[in-house]
Amino acid sequence: MGVTELYWIIVYIVAIGIAGIIYCYWHRRVEVKFLNRLIGQLRAQHKVRQALNIKHVPFRYIPLYVQLQQLLNTLPPPAGRDKLTGLINRVGLKSKLTRLMPVTEGMFVLIDIYRFRYVNDLFGFSFGDKLLFAMSERIKLQVGEQDMLARMNEDEFLIFFKTPLNETQLAVLQHTLQQPISINDTLINLQVQVGYLDLSLYHCDVSQMLRRLDLALVRAKASSNLMASYREGDDISQHRQLTLISCFPKALKNNELYIVYQPKYNVVDGNCTHAEALIRWNSSVVGAVSPSEFIPLLECAGMISMLSQWVIEQVLIQQRQWHNSGLVMQVAVNLAIDDLNSKRLSESIIAQLKKHDLSADLLAIEITESQLMTDMTRAVAALNKLKLAGVNVAIDDFGTGHSSLAYLKLLPVDEVKIDKAFLDNIDDDKRGQHILKSAIELAKGLGFSVTVEGVETQRAFDMLCDMGVDKIQGVLYAKPMTAAELEMNWRKLNSAKL
Image (cartoon, rainbow, N blue to C red; front, side, top):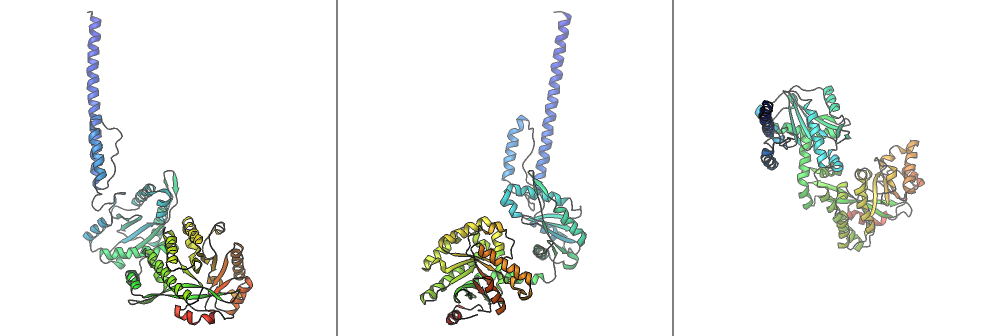
């Protein structure tokens, strides 16, 4: 073997040795880097549960990585922490605040994403979760080191500012949070509702302060700028609301609720052929309660269907009694949008009609225009089923909502009821008269019969007759009556000349 060949053999052996050392060193560095990232992500799990995210896993660590991933999927979220955002949750917030008590300075700000549930309905829950996470990250940027941030429930976030914000600062915060957010290349325009509580004015125990903050958010939802503070006395109003909600089921059983009927005057033949069923509640706890107060509460509490089913049953029982005595007229019942969304609504009404052996045209359903527009597709589907069964359908408060004229021709309705607001100062209001006449002509042109509510004067009645309405409802003709009072006045109602 020559010197040259021996030289290259030595070079080759040295090269292999160096390559082996480099490979081992590189391989060890990759493993150390992987283990460091793995430990870092595992440590972060005490704040928020999230999937491990390491792109390059060394071959011999793949089984460990897969097992850890499966284990994390089965673990509950950290105590006091929100699983999605990693923020403290309501329980964690109350725990922290309790340790700080008494808290007499600062401000609580409760932020709610306006109509967030429609995001879930339209894009899906995964999309909604991404929006909530993006919003939590945005809010974090507005929170100082001494402040506190929590996710209270689905789309509500609470900030505890150690230093109170003034109204201008709150408006800036709201504006900042309302900037559009891009999720999966889809730009989402936002509105946020803001309720706030000045702790220097209304500090007390933690639970009471959080309840007051909730009340502030309720007021914000009804405010034009979607922002409001807690006001002294809101607790009393909340107590009454909770009392009404808790008393309602028992009130139904104890017959505290009853129905009155307001007759409608048929302009064409001068008879009473229709009436509207109206609910009254004389509570044994708080006295007389207006429907305008308790019906929205029942809708918020998810109890409106209970009321609607009771009303329909009571009306049909009364209709059966009237039918047996020869008193025949159509009775209208008001339903809420939650009733229309119920898949069993039409089946339940049809079953009740069969049970009492009544013709379907003895019952009419009234639904407000604004409610129809909240979910047109479902509403039309439900109303179509009732129409096919022979039940009459009416749009209540016609002209006061925000409907599109393009949708009106699609609605499966028989009648529109023009709200009494159109009659305000109608005698001397030429523009108001023109609008009222146009609304009547529009409805009749679409094939709907027209009823006008709230008719109180002879002059208004004469004007409406000239405009071609079919029926009127109001104290000029008859006030709401109990079933017994209506029976006693039946002959008079059918011989009245207005």
